[in-house]
Length: 178
Image 1 (tube, rainbow, N blue to C red):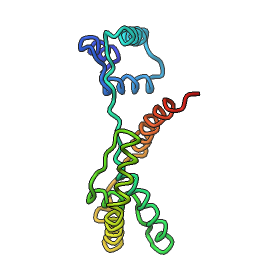
Image 2 (cartoon, helix red, strand yellow):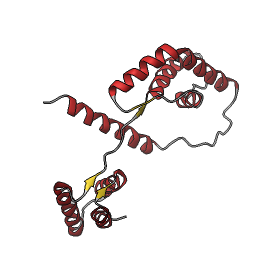
Image 3 (cartoon, helix red, strand yellow):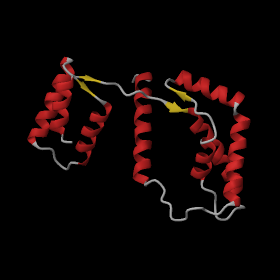
Image 4 (cartoon, helix red, strand yellow):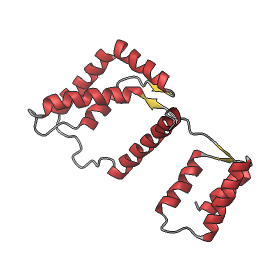
């Protein structure tokens, strides 16, 4: 979809969705140069956002605290074993196996994330270790069932990490005035 069409849609609907915003950002990031029409459309969108004619729908920010707990534990366990194992274990495989067998712990605020971390450490740490140990055991016992599989492209992972860092940077900037 073009910038002009996105802007027309936003003006027609009265709101700019996170998907529309991301698409405009992607177009601007990948274009070597924007056309005059694209600049004019972006100007119309900015004016509409400033006057309230178009409202930007906020993105709901959330994290799965279980992911960070499992990843930390997986990295630690794999690091302990890596020197004695050939081929080395894949931390992503270990973490994914464990996460598929553990409850998610989503949070939308830092306070909620702290609560979820504390709860998980008190109530679920044993289960987390058990699932990671099971994942390691299965990984060591069974050869790769699909040697031709392709991992996520690093650009996809980098985009996810970039998005995560941007969302946390906004929180950092708003909580730490210069």
